[in-house]
Amino acid sequence: MNKKAAIGMTLLQEIPRILLTIFVTLSIVFLISSFSKTEVKTFSVETNLMIQRIVFSEAISYYDQDINRIYPGIIDVEKFQAADFDARLSKSIFYSERNSWIGAKLYLQPMDYGFRNIERYYNEDYYKLKEPLLGFKGIGGVDRNTQELFVLAIDQFGTKHPSKLTIDVIMSRS
Image (cartoon, rainbow, N blue to C red; front, side):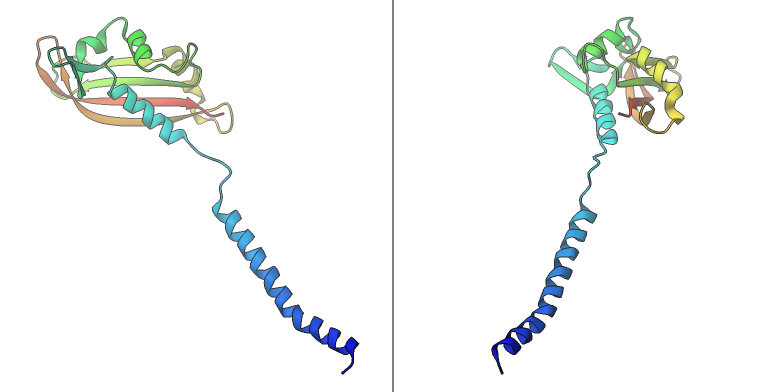
């Protein structure tokens, strides 16, 4: 066999190897692109964090001064009804001087009629401004995360009332 024939035969033998290399490369690119995400959705994490920050804040939870401890599952009704509730909660849960992307409605409902239902807000102006946008899709709308928590509520006499705390958080889509 001459040299030209040997080179032609070698090239014919390399064609399957080249096709296999192309197939493997395209398969790897396809697998990597199918498992990688370019959009990160953090809405549920951010709103759940907000709910936990509210529940664990000193602004609504019962605080025992003797042992310097906050009880997260026990709501102090006096603090919840106080006139400076929004200011205390904003101090406890600080996002920025002008919070324009998250708000919450807190609804405390006793199960034994020990006191009246109480509705309070965190960032009330934002909440009432953005609540009508809940049905809209896309940028500019808002999303909602609502959680119901069963808590104990302590009134001014120290009586514990089983209650339900509903926290409704809305946050802008951006």
